[in-house]
Length: 96
Image 1 (cartoon, one colour):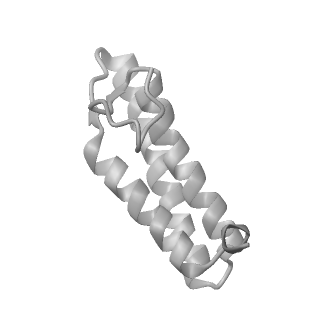
Image 2 (cartoon, helix red, strand yellow):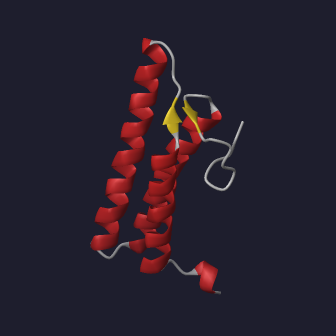
Image 3 (cartoon, rainbow, N blue to C red):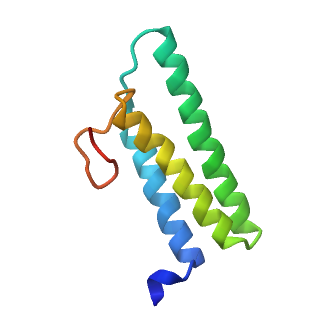
């Protein structure tokens, strides 16, 4: 039952997990086109993380939880397609 309820603690846990992943992954994009794609993906990651904090502070925990998962998905996708290196961490990323 506890896993079926979105709490502030759960959102904060996912915010921390995404922050850890954002810090760990390092860019490995090569060429201007891939660098631009990665910049766009990281901007989306950061924007969704910001949205998650805003929703959490506004008391909308469901939207906060959704936004932080979208944020993490942008990082996960960047690692998966080879624009970032997840350094073998299969806890933080879905590795290629």
